[in-house]
Amino acid sequence: MHKEFFELIHKDHGFFRNILGQLKQTQGTESKRREELFTKFKLEIEPHTKAEEKVFYPPLQENNEFYDDVLESIEEHHVISLILGELERMSKQ
Image (cartoon, rainbow, N blue to C red; front, top):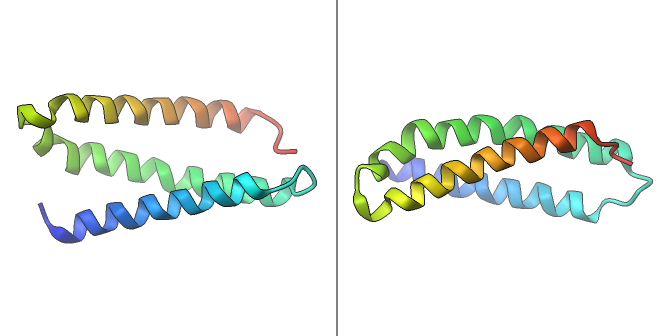
């Protein structure tokens, strides 16, 4: 697999940690900022997880050493999707 793809994944994960950190620091009075950060996170995480599942995971899954790790990662992506759906319906205040 290309080194650039690994670098992109690593960069994206840093981006997501940064947004989550910013969300954690928002106060109840910053609902507009919280909504903006949440929307940014959601819009970016969905294509990221789909790309990992389509490009990154299949070659790893062929190797028995990584098979269980790949299944766990796919399950985590599913959980992220469920949680984002629940959070989207909640008030951002």
